[in-house]
Picture 1: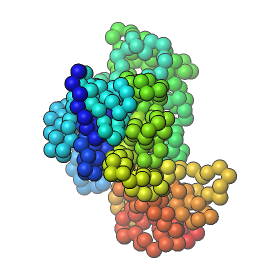
Picture 2: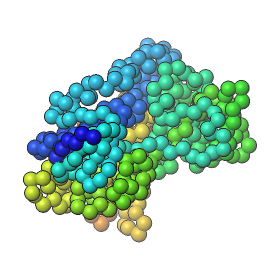
Picture 3: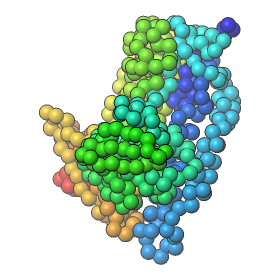
Picture 4: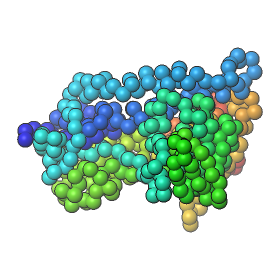
Length: 463
């Protein structure tokens, strides 16, 4: 076994790990970045990037059809869509991101990293010793439900759904979360006959009802059959295809079943049992990223592995705080993760933005409903302004905001409609900055843009 020493060892080289290592190096430390699959991680090759590459052509075509005088065809060219997606993912070649790490002063190491002791990570025959900290950024892995027969049929996970290069004639999708609705629409627009199987009444159950209803309507408009309140009871293989038995007696036949039923923190093969933690459980951290259950303050974590805010941009944000905190501790500074300070991922608790890139889009940040026992008020209106009318014929959309009436500040905003993602950052800034509504009134939206919805929301509130 060879032994190497670094100031910091980062496990997981996705966007979160890359940011943690880069911030540590920027703070004057040496860093090793360990990755068992591809440098760039899940987001670059199997999640955020390829899924949006699959969705964007269909969204653009649908948008063009909503305007008169725009000559467009009736269908996408799947081969061209797949080729563009493959360009964005470099066909799985991570050389560029491996080389980026080297160029940034980070030592990239291929292999599965396991914690084998205090400040110690073993990668094959190499032992990496950290002078100051180990930062875990291993992300999450899919959760497969215990459905009888599921292991007998042709199944896709999220990776197969974003990397496939042939359109299945019949695709069933189990799960109404972000992956489920995005991939149901993407593959329907590429030519598949899609059935979406939901346990509840609508997709996206954690968001306001109008958001889930809008997405369900958009899916149905694209020919997706939405089986609400169904759930999958059992599956079996019939003539090479999947026979799916839903609650209520409905039966489906599919060439592929996409299982999109959630994810859990990837700590199962991390070696955390060597330091007294439970494999498969999230790493609980403070706002600086320090793992609370480990003595000595040497173990940090960021991103999905913590179970806090499982979106890529929030993981990168937390990784920057963790990398900066480790560098400060190495300099002998006291690190107190005071709210909104440089060493605290405070926004995880207050302002987590997320976009669902379906058509219509859903964009949300902060709370989606009033807090129990608090004097909050929810305002909900149609997005019916000059900007939306010009944006698309028969534009349909809604917006809501949650207001703390005692402090007169926003706690959350949700939009649903074509291209509403670009409205989201203004809402995020207003929430993080705790801009009083009477002051927000003076942020005049440009005419004629969809941002006029801010004026209408505030008027509806009473300003």
